[in-house]
Image (tube, rainbow, N blue to C red):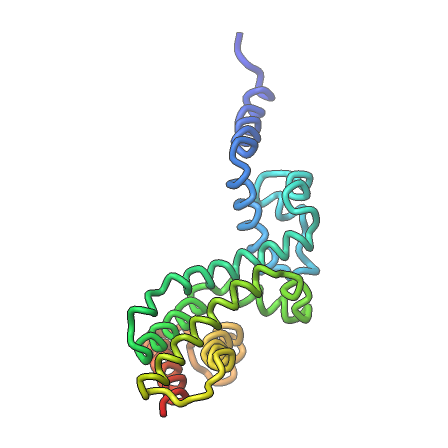
Length: 223
């Protein structure tokens, strides 16, 4: 006896449900990936849980089961995106390099990461519209960010000890200096590019800007 059309259509849906049930981590990650896209496209206020559910072929109930609310899902997205940059950053072999080369490597990484991860830049911009309401509630984001401040502090101390960097440098200031340029050229690439008629995606422009921010940071640090 052959199965009817409804039963045949139901099989892949049921299989997907079983797959999600058997792999909750993958389900959670799929929801987060879809949520990133929705929040980037629509912002926090405009994003809809229905749309996120549609992107993942799941249900609102499943999303609420994993994250509780749209706002909690948004905070989880922020934590995911900050973890991605902080964890990759933390894996750089900076301790193996002499101070100036380590700083250059960190600046180059920061430049490239922002350039390649527009979703991170746009989500942080959205969070600034909300006055860091959700970042301020996240202990994990602050804890992860303390690592880069500690790493920079150690590099600066080594540079002072070897006589290449001036004393009394603030790691947070240095982080702001290098991040500001890298972030702005992505967050404002359309308005800046239109006003000044420059293609910030052009390979030669990118190379010039990367060299410029490296020299600007190192110039500030050197004795």
